[in-house]
Length: 306
Ligand code: NAP
Image 1 (tube, rainbow, N blue to C red):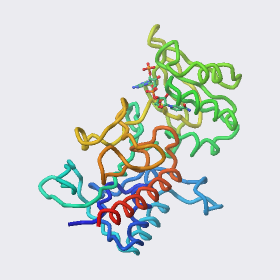
Image 2: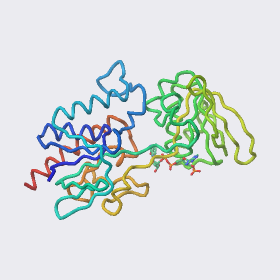
Image 3: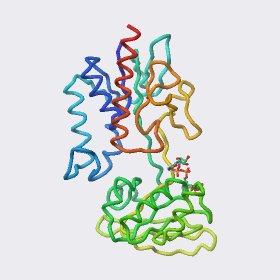
Image 4: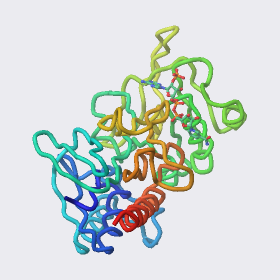
């Protein structure tokens, strides 16, 4: 019987592992097929406190893992396929194997949606990203584009006008899905140029870096090229909570619902931390903070149930 199983190895998962490790709970971290975390696919991280010169995303994740294992966290590369409540404990199933545990911390994150264009994966961190807060400041005085028409796209486009010389807002329809206030703010910003009824069909590169996008107008079928240095894709995220279907309450977009001001869920003993429960902030530091809260709450839950 494990005390704590942590599912996921992003900032939330490792932070939960550091805290539960230091609480002598010997957490078991289930990492899936490979170590996760959106920072493993980014380049430089400039906004994580404590690194004034910035730090490479994968390096930061390695430090977190080292810190967690130093305090007794054990890591297994197994992908969780389901979690069931069994009285006051949980059965965590990984394919053919199964673990029993008193508490579960779910920190499986959310995957940004991408367009599915050829060569996309290689371009991530080289002019293709899903996070304006993380990467916007790298693109000063150059043109960039945001793809999408929701609140995220409008928020990111408006934020990017602080740095970029011009922000193309490429949307597949002729009206935005975003709330009126966010849409108005974006459309009234003179640095933002909407590109309506348009779909990006190709990313064009120069020496492995983004150089331009090929855009097709869905009404006229006209094709144009837009020169730019970075594309910010804001077409939504997919929270990785499908394996908990039927057990945990999720919202209409699939994010796990946390109880107010904590990481508790509707299932006693199961806590959710980081992007799998957060569609608003989605930052490394907020995910880490959530991992800390989940660990402290799991520790208290175990003490109360002793
Ligand atoms: P969203 O509301 O689902 O919008 C996604 C956008 O991407 C839509 O405009 C959609 O186009 C477009 N899209 C989806 N798939 C596409 C594809 N394959 N190709 C091209 N375009 C595609 O997602 P979101 O903007 O990330 O927002 C998610 C939730 O977070 C929402 O509830 C939002 O209100 C909330 N949010 C709130 C704030 C805030 O209040 N500060 C900020 C960000 C997000 P269509 O419009 O044609 O469907």
